[in-house]
Length: 284
Image: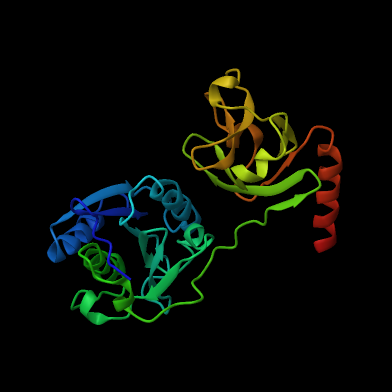
């Protein structure tokens, strides 16, 4: 397997963390990268992931990674288990390399076919002294730099066949109804769901959405809604999102991560809602 050096110019390393920008942590990671190679473009995706929120970090990475060219190395660190027995991994998928803690952060990447993963065990590709509280600087950043410089990710350590995956809410498709849940609330109060665009497409443009006991229309974009009104749309992440034009869907609808979402063809929503409630009751 080749390294990730981009053709036609320096390699790209993106950085996604929950470190914020007040402290020097991000700068220290960049310094560790530049100590290995200066032939690299460093791109900050975000350092404002909610502290310890692995799901939010995974979704940020999913949204951003698709915009970068093949050969990009994505360094992601949301790591509440730093210094414990959790592994560090590199995942090669879709022509990209993802490096960080093996705690579910790369769940969206692992949903696709053809990925390979490797544990970051080779000591020659980390700093000589490794702090138990800052693997982002001491383990993940040097590994990302070496891969960006052309290192085969397989040299980082043994193959991993069972990387950790987040327990995404199950998406069920039954008889004209798709059931999922809210995964994330963004800074605008939009509700990002577990339902992908492809699952919605088959239900038609007149599909109806039920979330937190509110029935909402499916629209094309925010501007199709009147100010202060709620609706559902396919967002830039190719996931169904619930939005309030010029407002917060989370606040207005009283929804949060885990809130169930039902999408249905017209006339099927009442039956789907009743059936879903019955199934939830039977599981208790």
